[in-house]
Image (cartoon, rainbow, N blue to C red; front, side, top):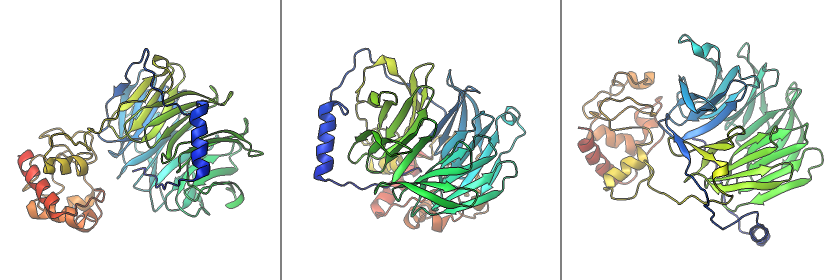
Length: 456
């Protein structure tokens, strides 16, 4: 899962700066709901929506999810077209090439899959698989000529790939920590990158050396968009800073800081002169880059904004977050500074009227599994109905990993307890199940009692 580590620093300088922002209206505490309508929600995924991207040329949107899948949608009408299966773990990022002919996806399985959009119209297609990273991939960028692709990995490396051959051309090492963002220059000969070490760097990708460090922020940089023609560098950081600077001189054009709220999403639309930010606390901010004024600033989802895209024709934004749905907000339906009421009762984080066993299932299991008897659905894991006494990897219709298919485990009170006590990496090594442990004996026992009753 695309999770950004962050720390909180409370200094006099930052506190004064935030207070000034509130006074001057950059951060408003008022609630305005005149003419407001709730967002439209689009269902399809069986887990949090981690990444969004659009191709205006092809009228397509792609959504990447924790459920290991990618969905293709008709963009203007938001109608599902196809589900793409191929990753072995959560998918964090989906990016179209400039022409919209190619779609690249990257995930926790440390793989990039490149999909030919034309071939997706047939049932006989398979993606190109790029596999060299050793940790999750969180960002991807195509060169403008669509001959190369760059990837940002949490293995501290940047990879440059030849799309036609699928071969790795260059592995760039230099960031002191995970790399979070990559952007090709217009000529495709250089690359901008940003990382957890707080730096934004410019690389010569032919020889693989660093040309210069543009920013040494001190706090990790999560998201980055560059535009050389308009001399803009737009980025967001772990400590909640949203910033726009000139690329050539570094002059600060816009700066807004929200303490303890990492910036987790950013998209840039030069045709509209807009940047759209999203934060880990659900905030979406739309910035006019001509005036450097905030046009909309609102709480869009309860929890992190993993990605957000703008539809200039409909004047809407689509938000992916912890819920299984994509939320579309009509921007002309409310004034700026609308704050969504907080709701803790999402499917996997419920608090109301649950037994301890049901609560453990909601928090530890329900993001991947259902209790349905028939529907395989679109969750990352198979349904648990009838799980007791069933051999691991044996439910028809679910695409298990080979490691689980070859396993001889029979699910019982003992094996399920061991799974959550020792962890999947010990009990079911080589499988797709993410690491989940329940330390307290009582919590594990309550979960098992709940599952025995709920899965019969």
